[in-house]
Amino acid sequence: MNSPISVSTLNVQIKSLLETTFIQIYVEGEISNLTYHNSGHIYFSIKDESSTISCVMFKGNTKYLKFQLENGLKIVITGSLTVYAPRGNYQILCNKIEPSGKGALAFAFEQLKTKLEAKGYFDSVHKKVLPKYPKKIALVTSPTGAAIEDMKKVASHRWPLTKFILVPTLVQGEGASFDIVNSIKFADKLDCDIMIVGRGGGSIEDLWAFNEEIVANAIYEAKTPIISAVGHEIDYMISDFVADVRASTPSNAIEIALPDINEHRIYLDSLENEYNNRFKNILFNKQQELSNMKKLFEQNSIETKFNFIQTEINLLKSSFKTDLSQKILSSQNELNLFKSSIKNSFSAFLLKSQNQIDLLKSNYELNHPDKKDKNGFVQISKENKIISLEDLKVGDEVELQTPRYIASCTLNRLTKQ
Image (cartoon, rainbow, N blue to C red; front, side):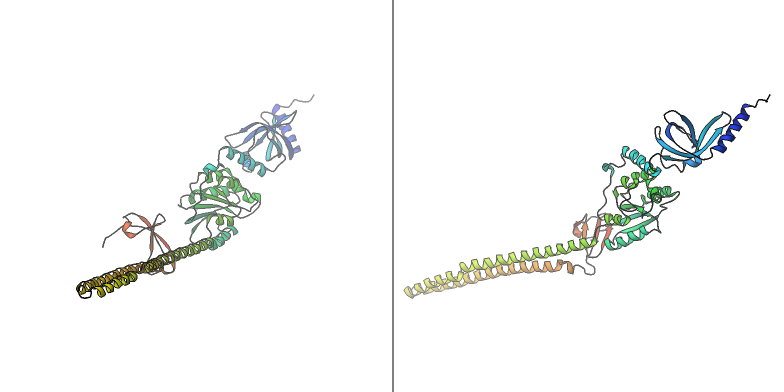
């Protein structure tokens, strides 16, 4: 009669048989009894219509899991069969888990997108407005990629007045998501007007760092307006939905962030033309008024009235030549004085009108944009409004402008001469 074996021996024999027979298995089922253990291991069961089997994925393999396991989720497991001898339990040791019917990355993307959308990360109420004329922009990207060169090229042609600060960042591979988060937090402290976070094109695996939840949190919590510029136009990342503005490419991000200098040149030319035309109209209207006044004086000619009086005097002379000679002479003198006074008053009026026209012309010439660029002469503006020096106070922040430069300063002394 054969001697009996111990329970431990039987379990060890079963363990050896199962583990050497089921070295590589590929099984599909629905998750149940899911537990994320504090140790980092994941315990769960998979089942079909009539059977259930226990599964475990140890911490070393969970770091390759791109999506979140959920009860009821149908998955495909790649692994091996193992036996826990002290209890005689067998289970699947999971090396790889994929969602059934779709790729892990695509499923992980939809999972995180749904989660963040429910938290309000995509709501327009949280979107910050980009400044129209940014003075400083932080670029969170790789210092060696093609994206940074493309952005520099577009910026130099579009608006060369803006300062750029490159924050060198790892944008793909292991640890990229943590480096992106640290770079965003660092750039957020640089007092920049805009932050551009992104990289050039690549595979979904290359771009995946921008689909991580920690990156989405960093973008959402940043105080600086952020443009997400990852990959090409067809690539959509989680960062695109969380950021304040999404750009189709890094170059497009620069086009969104910066104004077009050529459009502003055209606008300034139109302003100059409008200024010239309005001033010409003012001068023309003043000249028309002066011409009309001259015609009015001609229609009510003083000379005509003088001639009429002169005729009456001549009649009086002939009628009362002897008796009224003195009166006539006196009247003649008064008439001469009156004529002289009227002529002097009219001449003074014409001279005053001419001086006003000359003054307008002089002011136009002095304020013409082509003549503003003189050594030592600048235009003072405060809060985008032209202001005179006498209206300033100590501590005011002003801008000193010439047609080519703008200097921002704070007034620390004001002395009256």
